[in-house]
Length: 607
Image 1 (spheres, one colour):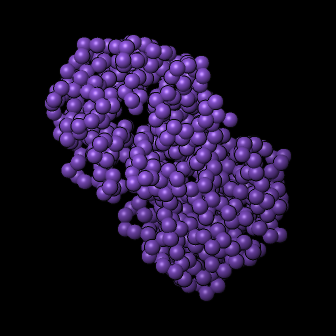
Image 2: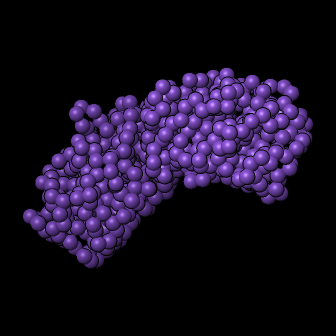
Image 3: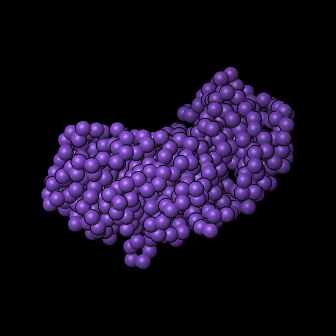
């Protein structure tokens, strides 16, 4: 294969305030999984940099759970589709697909023999279903609630029992199979967010937005106790997870803490204070072997430390919203990938280990549209919050002084030698030097879209929606129009100079890449066809002989400059999500990113 995937830096869980987030664990205890957008992300629990992404759902996925056998995963989305797919093969072949009801699936549970599945959520007339996994035939009915069911669990030992928790402030208890409604439990005064049976089946617990956790007998459903006497947490409780030996319970709450309870003694063993910010609310948790995981409203996954409750062992960071742009930079012998997302968050990744973090302080408040690294090792970024920021890569923190306000929204920028930055805004082109605006072209006569500065030169190429590339030259503190236009094949979406400055590649909305030769007075050198939809990004390899383009057809092509027929095609680079940005780490390593909020590293080899 001319290309293969080297690394996947996965997205974080997609979370929303006041909604619990379910983390699924694999029965062997090696990995955990969660949903983000249309993706199900499976990550290794010991080394979360190892990840696998399943992207076959057509709608946003809410929950995914491993079968107790470990061979299959069931995942449910907002349209009510339940997909059961294979975990052993790389292709994740679909085994069965069901539509238990019309509406969002909120939770899934399997019986211990991996033969029956219970699914609950927001149906129109029914809120749950329980059926055989291989035929879809019903093995009982889930009744007794008159509002959305948030949570379901099945006792993992015979005789089987089923419990549900709902927005009608009640839990319900079922016996089976076939599962029949036994009684309603109305101890809670607010929404019941989570119900879970202990692994040995002796008890089950319910957690609610009223801050209480009740423990019941797993076989009869009789109430045993209320954890913490009156209240378990000061805020609503979103998730609970039992320890593998069934003696302790981990809870996650909106009061920004997680707690471990000794269920037998009804006492708190540990309290984990996660912070004071609203983003530190805890929306999900998982107890897997010795690992205690919790999910914050920021999307970060915390590995809790029993021995030091005030500080997590590690925090997994990243993006939970779609990534719009990326750039790479070598710093101290290491290659870093910088990615900027739809919510204004910029992350940097060590390209070898996948270790990542964000910058300190307050950064962009809206989508980051474009980033580049200048000669002074500053990350220059422009955003829909109408600012251009210069962030020092050695200090790694945002300073308030380095955000320059624009008159209109910036779309793209390029950095040149000598401290110059050219910013393209809506209907405006701005030249900046040393973090100050020094020249503005207010009405260029066309709508500028993308910009590139020739390496080592003073030529600026601006691509417009009029289907032309307009050339300018930097002269001191001003930008002079070179009165020269190059014709592309459609509205220009992106353009880039090769690293030696010899060629300019332009991609457009009409699915074509055109390359111009600078030495021949910008004569058209070659034209490259292949994409099925609008091309949105382009990047040159350091060898100046190859360049890559990515488009809305979810394809990435690697083209050879001298031969338009020879290309490497990477189909479904990010399945069901269009590629938003590309960059090269070295001659054989391409980084792609997309609206699925993940970053992928590919190794490319030429014949």
